[in-house]
Image 1 (tube, rainbow, N blue to C red):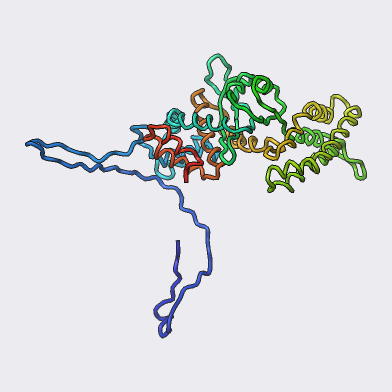
Image 2 (cartoon, rainbow, N blue to C red):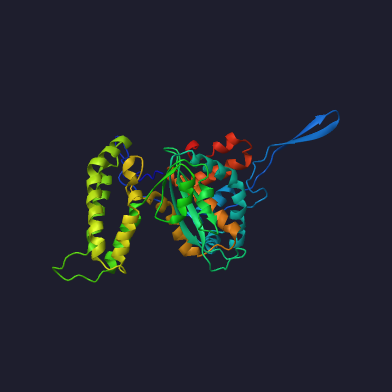
Length: 403
């Protein structure tokens, strides 16, 4: 938008010419507003053989059929709750200020109904994801109040799988009442390649039963030493650093190497890790083996050392291939918006609501992973998905196929 700051007629009287120069830029925002869109359908009357027939212009297909919410409003609600962590009761009040009276119950029902609308797209994303050879996984707790046979206060789980073919990552959330090994076995059925996770034993079975190579996450190991360092007694001036601090310093060297080589091609990364990272790893392992006997077994430092040594073969796995990452950070970053939202809305009411939430998070985080703005992507999908009646039309809605 351009605003011209003009001279008055008196000020420029007698000038041979005038011109404008740009003197300032301001970032502006237009607040949201509620409006009613009216669709008027044109109809034509034809006289044929003494009778009249009417032909009407084709109406756009709405993903929820007879629904008072535009596709823009549906996309706005999904982004507000699942990308911006706004509980629906807050969103209800915000919309009311803008002139739209929509109850939180109505919005929740729309989100649940959209789960069925998005299901073919989610299925395509999962098939696409399993075609890759490198996946990262994570899981976090979720309370669902009305889960049959389960107390309302018991933990249920939101699982996350991130990965896919190079340059086309899919980030998929899945709700399940269980944290058992049967869940990753189901989610990763048919996958062949490298699986990166923390030290949770629930991933062992799927790796045993399939041609899957498992690697570990240095973020988890480092976090344990940081927790041990924070729990250590306050050091006085001149006192030596704690053993946990020493371990953190050694692990930090590995991350510095990764920062230095992050822009290299995978083959070059592999070589650099062998020449730069491997000596640091050898030194760290020797230090861990030497110091595990020098700290109390009931200390956090001992637990951190023991965890790292037990996971060692998995933790060093990233060095074998430059396409792999030192940590599971991409998966953790993708699941973090869910954790932030959970702190705001605390729980899901029903299993259907939890599954619908998983679908919304999947589409939003997949859009972000592929460089798309979530609202623009969801609006585009909602504008076209109701008319998608072939696999090709659904595939055209995948993020890497959307311009």
